[in-house]
Length: 323
Ligand SMILES: NC(=O)C1=CN([C@@H]2O[C@H](COP(=O)(O)OP(=O)(O)OC[C@H]3O[C@@H](n4cnc5c(N)ncnc54)[C@H](O)[C@@H]3O)[C@@H](O)[C@H]2O)C=CC1
Ligand SMILES: O=C([O-])CC(=O)C(=O)O
Image (spheres, rainbow, N blue to C red):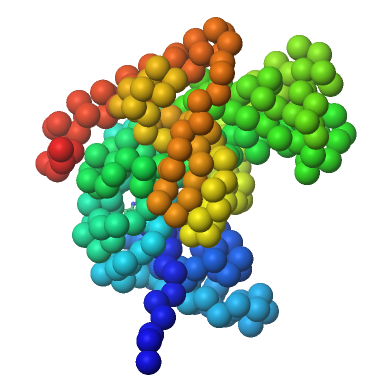
């Protein structure tokens, strides 16, 4: 008798984003979930809690909590949420050194057990962490991507719907670039049922919504006082997991490795990509105005500076980046 191996997603980091993502994946019946954390008991407790909801939520997905990477073996997708979230007053860049060490460590352990996985990075600062994870993993670049553009676009979408009073379902918003102050919201590519928002709102209103989008993560950090956003981030990561597992050919903004696209080389940054079972299957090159291209280049320069900074910081660490 053939024994079927269920699809498996491992989530490294059983904190707010990781545990909410585990819930979404299981309740959407997408895959079995392995939730791993350094904290003993936390992933096991969350997994048991989620298992006990199965009868109510009507699914039979296995959710396992562990501190042992061997339990993640043969994961189809691994999502890295391990790391420290920022506190009020901090930028995502302030997490660079501490999270770089965590991301390098967990990535190296992940690929021992899942050498062919698709890896989705969530830990901040996002674009840099995705680059470091790719380097440490040895995976083909198409199999590594970062989650941010879907979240930033969803925030822009929400603010457009709130401002216009129109249904969120009809709003499509596009945000490219890095997951930081230099992200690049694109009003020309943001529409309400096909109508560009530039036809529906005046420039000062759009500028105000763009500013709120750029500040979207910080706005929640300031409100929550401890920790950062996790419901919308988990939804965004789940959309990427779903697109890969179900080979959906979704066109979604993700931090992808660029090799000349948009005039950018050897960097991970948010661009529209076709996502399928092999990961990033295509980078879509939008035509940009001079101002949009300049903004994307400035965003990429800031990511490149942070990558250089991370590499300098890590040179003094006992476990330098594997080449
Ligand atoms: N890319 C994005 O758009 C977003 C990124 N984030 C980032 O995601 C990360 C996680 O956020 P939260 O879940 O809210 O934080 P959290 O503090 O709730 O959870 C992080 C978890 O990582 C675990 N961890 C730390 N070091 C580890 C290691 N070496 N191995 C395994 N687990 C380890 C911690 O024990 C903790 O349970 C943060 O860096 C945050 O800034 C959060 C939201 C959106
Ligand atoms: O703001 C943060 O630190 C977490 C994050 O990336 C977001 O919510 O966009």
